[in-house]
Length: 360
Image (tube, one colour):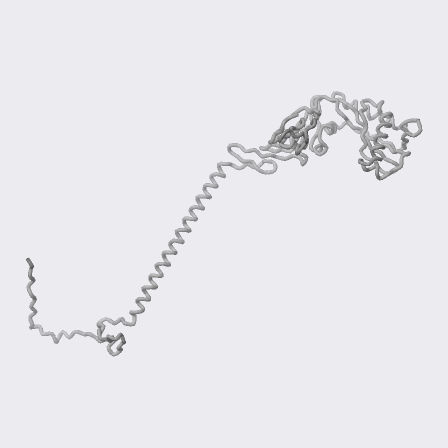
């Protein structure tokens, strides 16, 4: 068992089946809850044990290969309950089929059991997988031999036993799928069903390697570039890293963003923003002063307009008697021309000025 790891890792491990004891699973997908922490099954990690290792090395075997076969049962009536795996009729037929077919298949090299995949109408058409134990050293030969022996066993067999009451087959409709060993299929017994599509099996020096799409050894490699790839039931996902110089973005972490460039850009942007604000404040301040000046000029103009009716031309003086003491305007005395007559001046008159005295 391995304890949880909150961040995705690209670990390579050897698979083994473990038990969870009596602890509850809680939110732990592939593991169990111990206190407040998930303890993950082998080959799983993450805070909820929902991430699987990118490379799993089960070793040299033995492994379970599957040969697909189809038989048609004649002495069993079809029922809709036979497609419901939770029904009692299905469970009863499944147990009977596995028990009786074993008597036919147990002589096949490497036979390790049978598994029903579907039951269809047409009498009772039973599609199933025959499980064969093989190793990778001579696995191809073992698999080919098993397929040949299955064909020989079913080709001339019309029942599971000569005794009455046993299942009877329609020999003409019996089929055994004859194809080469699929190494990737060997991983299917080791990987959870909802993650199998993201793994591929490779024979690496006669040892099985189950590699996910996050592994460069997988034919459909999901390259995360400057990121870390992890597999969950949703498929491969990239977790982008951060270095001292760059941030990495994008679904494949292929885009790099310079930290220095971002910091410089933000600094320049803030400086431009500050300069813009200062400029706006200056403009607003100047407009305020201009409005104040305009108000002063307007007041002065108003004052001037009051006296504008009393202005006089050059060569005129204001007649102090033009207004009465009662404050009533007398238009007939508004203004009188004042023109000095120098020819009337007696230039023989002496003007005497008193001498200034200095006080002691």
